[in-house]
Length: 303
Picture (cartoon, rainbow, N blue to C red):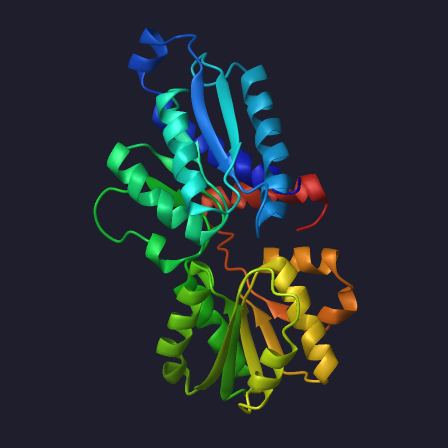
């Protein structure tokens, strides 16, 4: 629920741009603005869908009580995509063809959103996803119909390597999943490590829902790595932490996702993650970010 000021700003700013023009205000005065929401309520990132959807509903209710956008209420249509690329495509088609939705919110995982992007571009329907980090979702040229608010992998990996260098680590390994976010981060790490004077010495790519990573932890330890950069989901982060404890290995550990690590700490014993670090890049001087930052401080009592 702590995400709601951030999600509110996304909804307000995006939908205002889409529907503030006089034509819509006059010709479609009281018709609802139909939005399709395909989030992860099952699968490897189910916890994010469960956490985020109450915030989306709360914000939409608040907007509608205030008169909607130019007098038009917002109507949500919500489906589970199960972190499955095939399911999100089916959901998006249903939103468009049956419910006549004019904008979408898509799920958490990069794999799902990579499947969605092509369809959204072909159908010229705008969509926002707050969470995926894959560099393949980053469109550098031309008009985009897909938007995300997370930093791309490349920037996060650069910051992790810089941090490792600051701490004197010259041998770095990688642990992550076989899904798009992790494999992209892995590719970026191999490419950028020499720039920081760091030797990339090994990697472990784990299947989602792995139950024991002890062998993989031993393999990385044997590479001589003193630091491990991780792009892993919540449940598997806990499995990885247990494996490290089992073999008594304590390298410097940094997670590319603060949200994933935070959730892991709530799923497992916090002591498993003692000494770990994570990263989140944010520019609090940008007007929109500053507004969200201030709202979050007022809401949570923390800056």
